[in-house]
Length: 454
Ligand code: TYD
Ligand code: MG
Image (tube, rainbow, N blue to C red; front, side, top):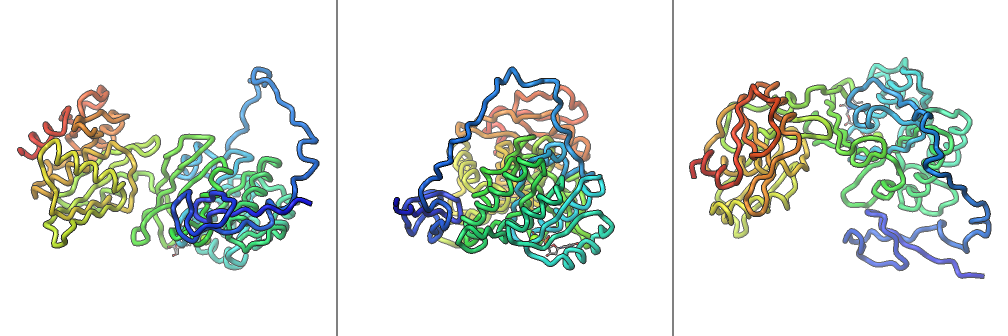
């Protein structure tokens, strides 16, 4: 008989290995490799391949058959992030830090979908049904026709789902589920992978939309939902700073809609409230124009969003100057500092640099480059930018400015919020935004000269 083959995988990134090691070659984390138990042991089954699949010509598929209709929760911010509603038979992962509000969001979503006529079941592996009911009461949703189950055994859950055949099943959370044919503890990669696989397969087989909730821990102590990301159709991340009331639901992968779409919520005493005008919210804490503060006109998914960038530049008491970034990429900050130094002759050596995106927002767009450069210069020169001005544009290593996508939408949003001027790279399409005075530049040196007179 063939010797059982041992396999190992990383609890942080899910990479597979044939032998144990202290450090994962995939993600570089230490002490994250664990043995996979009960999955690949034993020879492959003889029956594999006995049933042949059949393929059809793409052209033979009927084009008249309309795609299955999407269901709408009525929570606009959620429906948009899903790509315009919930697709039947889809598997969705909602990841986020513990305590950020995933259970609250999904209980509200369950209640809304149920009220909209979808047969919905909410399976909690973390709280008893009575606790979930109490939470629903607090959220003012106790009259919603949602079925509750407090269950962690995967087999029992699948039996329940098979019997009830809901249109939407929410599994909170995937880390608490355990399959009795897998030996390792709940939360381990093998368990998370097995449970996600079974539940995703169930969605495809029956047409039930399945939402898996996953906790992300930075230490990777519990299997990160990254293992699950490849298996599902849609990956949403629920982010935000604990100290802020804003929460952002972001699609990082979506087979049925645009990725990078965001939905903005506010955590209130009565659960999550939709924020329909995020720009106004992100700018609400902005005071008088101050040195280091710049408003960036960004695009998140299909929507323009204005956010305030704040920079602080001060002589460093340390031998190595600090670079601290919240809400933006620190590598990108280093690049902007290098370009300012090399192309414009403005050194930041010996200066501590702090950059913060206000409101707990995270920005990944390269179009924020110019706004970051403006904030850094404004802080360094202790000179505020002209009032009511937005800034956007990408900076290349040569110091040239590249036009951003959707210039018109950015300008329209700025105009809507009362901004009167914009600084942007030359070359963007700007025809429709006539009510805002646009100051275009083609390189960073020109920008520095014109705005800061340096
Ligand atoms: P929860 O949904 O349990 O987080 P997760 O499932 O991601 O771990 O939310 C936890 C936090 O949300 C908790 O600290 C309290 C807060 N909260 C409110 O502020 N208002 C509310 O109405 C509810 C239900 C929770
Ligand atoms: Mg929870």
